[in-house]
Length: 300
Length: 308
Image (cartoon, rainbow over all chains, first blue to last red; front, side, top):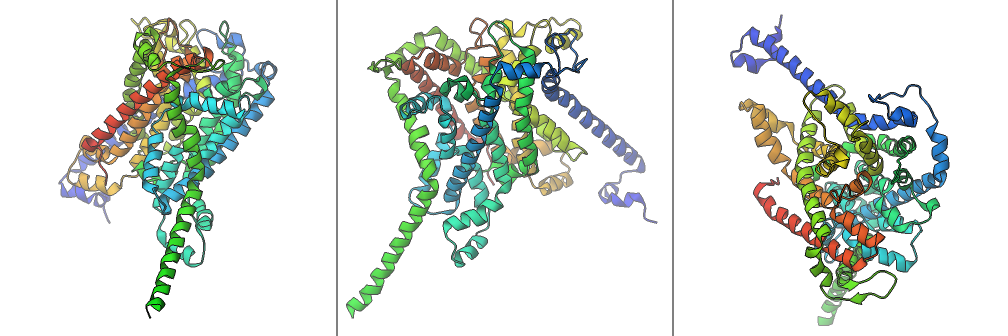
């Protein structure tokens, strides 16, 4: 016999009549419609340029410049792909991009996790001062150090090799260290103490306790690191000269000619180059927002 | 008797000293890669760059010490002044615009709606493609005759759309719009993380007190994510002072130098004309500006950033 109204005790307490419930449902419905409408409009703004690229990969040059513009190709064609594979050393570039991004990401994660663990959990001389220095390096634009680093790479004989693009990633990544330290600080010390009593040393505690617990933040950082290395343009154009050693990002940029831009090739290349990022993102998605949220909403 | 007492004492202090030494060694072992990186790739090169800015060096002949000549030349270099001006313009337009939009997006996708995860992903994903791909596609979107932007603007009666990338007044706004589009998904995710860290109890108790939506936003949401806002403002300003790839691909600095930015100009001097000393002086000026702006924000944060 319980009336539905009973589920709204506060409203009843406020003395609202039955008519207001009709109004409330109407407002709720309106609110939802507005919310979904807004979401869809924004979706169009964010997605159209992206979809234009993907569908553009299956168009001819003439179809791309049709006016009025049409999103879907008609008819679909695969013409651009064989031309693309011949126009640039595609296989080499694709492999180089994977090699640099995977080794770079791995290095960024390993070195940052190590440093973050030390800053969060170990006691050593000048720890807090060093941490402040690390935060300060986050403020330094890479372009400031770009020229001296180039000189160092030149002296090391690393120009036109992939080393300048990989090795610095293995030397800690301030943003990653910062985010992971916040995460490590929140892990309860009870487990750590228990492990210590069992005779585990710092390295074992790090590897067997902290690394497995920090999967969400590691996954989030892996996406970021992969994204930055995969999409890096400045690094490869500064350090590499041989075309076969270039990355896919640089390869695609070469289609932007000074006289004529080869749009069909560009769309095809850009579409292929975005696939690995999508794959990495989808794999890590489960952890993605959680990885940042757990780090205390980036609190200091 | 005295010696008997002394022996265990020194043993204790020795073992404590040993333990402290071991702790220090472990700590430094863990941060060793970062320390090497600091010396070789970040901290060291900052001083290297400062030194280099006092030389005239074309990478082929020996560097020649010229004191502060590079810095003295800066204010008289019309293109440097213009690049600096355009970088500041870019920053002060794109950061407030981008952060406002991404905050609103985060509020929108923070609602409990069916399928909201799909929208979150869809908003975030476009920005993950390389700047190169994005800039090239926007190059087409902005095309005065066949591009989508002007096709849509033409549909609005009474609007004469600009020719964007070939118009010196509209080329920088075009770069700004594209940059906002690219970064808003990323910023939205960080805002979203901040929003999700707010305990729902805060809202519930405020609602019981009769607070409306605007009051909830103003007095609960904003103060509680003020650190996220602060973090994003700092990071975005640093990021936009470095704007480079967008202008390189979208406009190559043109038309008529209207999209020359500082890093673009530094890149030109350092790696195309090989004026390493002069380029270093510019890079250092950029660093000084970034540093001052960041320090200023750090000072100001006490007035509006809440820590709990």
